[in-house]
Image 1: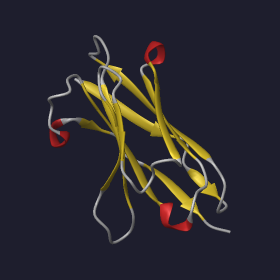
Image 2: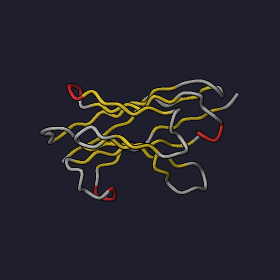
Image 3: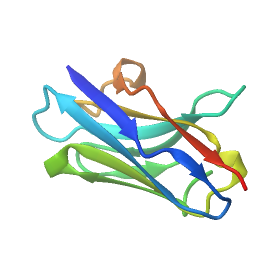
Length: 120
């Protein structure tokens, strides 16, 4: 079983940057498939970015060019670098992890989320 814990959220001004981290632990052998979602108040959870076990990356159009997903395999940690933040990026950000690229997102391990607030 894999556990993931997000950190790094906070309050940032519009145009600012923030880096989120997601530390994975538990029964890990090899790379995980991992990614990020977010959920704003009153809205559905929204996909942001994914990195496969093989390192393939894809982004949602809403964040392409502003957000960068990366990983440190030695630390079993996933990152989300967020630049040019906008008030509409305000949300709870969630990380997920799975031991295989074929595990449905609903069956992956999810963290509790970290709040990101973009406001002046």
